[in-house]
Length: 212
Image 1 (cartoon, rainbow, N blue to C red):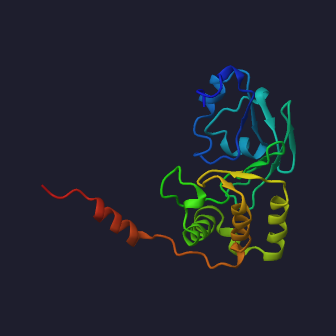
Image 2 (cartoon, rainbow, N blue to C red):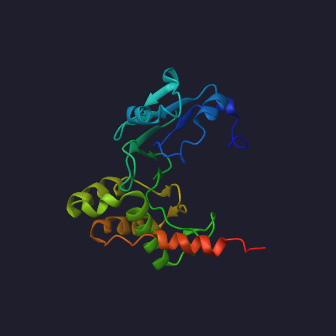
Image 3 (spheres, rainbow, N blue to C red):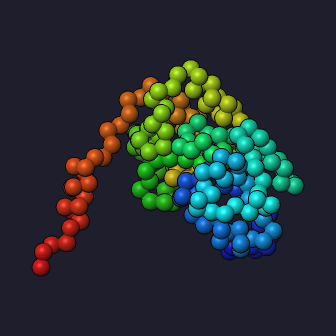
């Protein structure tokens, strides 16, 4: 990141939620950026204080549905439809139409830079279902489809031109509507069978060093 911006020029650090792959180095980052404020929320501080001493005077708490004025624009925090932590907030930049979707639309990727247009459509749809119901939000199988659909509408009706998130390619153009369509169906899909101990045994056997 510091190849793009000087640490002293960073004004805001946004923590979307408290999963370790999103909050791996907050102490180092906040120390390196002396003029930055840390955008988090009460639930994140409550759940994560055992790992990180939040600098309260430099924090700005932003809850789901609230906005944040960062000077040249106002960003809108809105929780995405798929999430695994009560601390989660997505973030929309209305000046660009970019929506930070956190863990929504996660899917296995053949390589980190894979463009979404290169993904096989069936592979992508299955991957979205696998991650959503198997690794992020298994509770989606329990929710009311109509009520969940209204929540998906709440996010999809934002003026989104680009979806950026973790564990997913950048989603643009017609793929945005397809991503939301896949998500909308999740409450009615049978959860996938996940790898169990027998799969782990196969992995161990396949990677074991031969005896010498």
